[in-house]
Image (cartoon, rainbow, N blue to C red; front, side):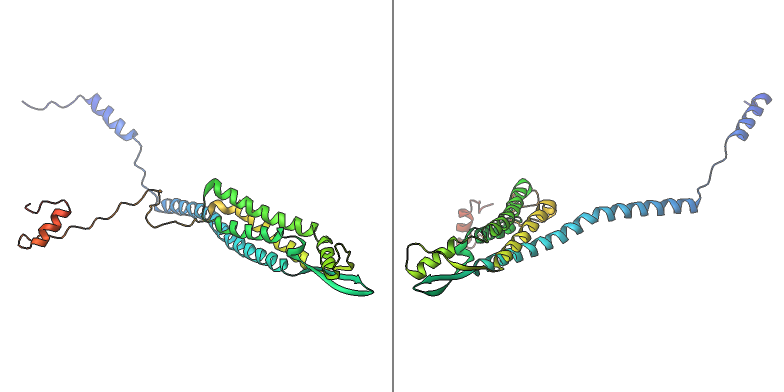
Length: 252
């Protein structure tokens, strides 16, 4: 059976449709390269923005540690120094008396120890507990500043020192002079307060201490690795007994 050619009208319609079809657009290498470079630049910008927070958190961590340790050290140092001194009159003589920081008020030294413990505890807790501990660190610094400044001019401890020096039940110190150590304690409290504020602002990005190495990242205990049982030699009775102790079948 011979092949019948299509009518001429249909052939002309097919040729016109083929000529009217759009030509295939070849990819432009230069445009593709520019698009790839633009995507890479955008990705680099996103990475740079994302890495800014960990860097600032690391700097805040180092600053908080330094401020907390230095602040607590200053407060404890000032608590052992003389905050005020004067004289006590007894029999026409002026006896020198003085009062130390711990004698004037023991609260700044206690708050400094609380702040130091809170600074360590920040890395042992997470989430809401870390916020609470950071707030406690800041409050210990604020309390140290308020107490040191409020009790700076307190003469009660100096009057007690004058009474002990004169052997009287009550005496008043004269020519009282206040030293700069209360201000040093207040400065240490400011440093503790700054450390607490840094912990409140950046503490959620700081690492936490791991209690043991037995736990995985998700908080679940890692599966214990069981050692393979040694092969059982049927000619050695001790191997047979050890297999029985392990609950194994030595005949298998």
